Image (tube, one colour):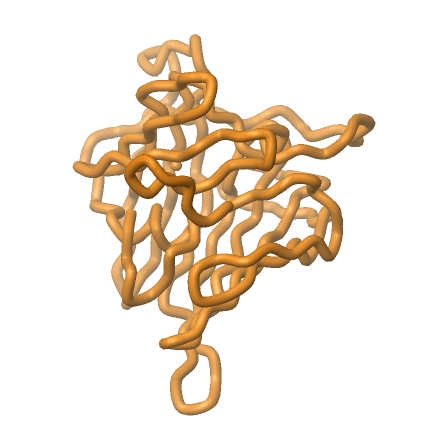
Length: 209
C-alpha cells in the first residue's frame, strides 16, 4: 500500500515502483467473500488503511518475478503511512477520498468519492476514471465480487494503469501499460497473494513459500 515519476504518479505505479524481492515468508489470509454493497460507496470501503493491515503481492516486471510486502505503520484521522520495502509512502484521507500526499500538500487521488461508474477526476498529466463497480476477480488470494476498477491515462510518455480494488480488502490487481510504436505494451503486472488484517497474529498464519 513508490514513486516512478518517469512512468506514472498513480497508486499502482507508485506503489510497485519500489517493490523489492522478499526472501522471508509473508503472512497472508484469504479475505471474506464480498457481499452486496447496500450503503453509499466510498473510497474507504475499498481501501482499508487501519494500522496493522499488510498485503503481499506477486509482481511480474520485465521478465522478473518477485514478492512485495506492504504494511500500514501509522494511521491518523487524516493521514496514513505505508511501509513499502525500504520506502515509506504517505496518503491523505479526506472526505473526498484517498490521495497521495506530496509533502504537506494533497496530491493525486487514487480513489475519489463518490464511487460510481464513469466518475472521473484529474491527475498529474492525465485523468483517472472508474470503469467498473461490479468487476469479478479470481486470483491467488481468492475470489472477489463487486470490485472497483480505476483506469488512469497519462501523457509524456503515454501510459495506462489499471488498478482493481476489492471491497474490504484494498488493491488486488494492478497492470501498467506504456505506449510503444503505436500500441500499448504491458510493463508490469501484480496480483494480491494474501492480506493480514489488524489484530491477526502473523505467526499463526501460513507463510508464503
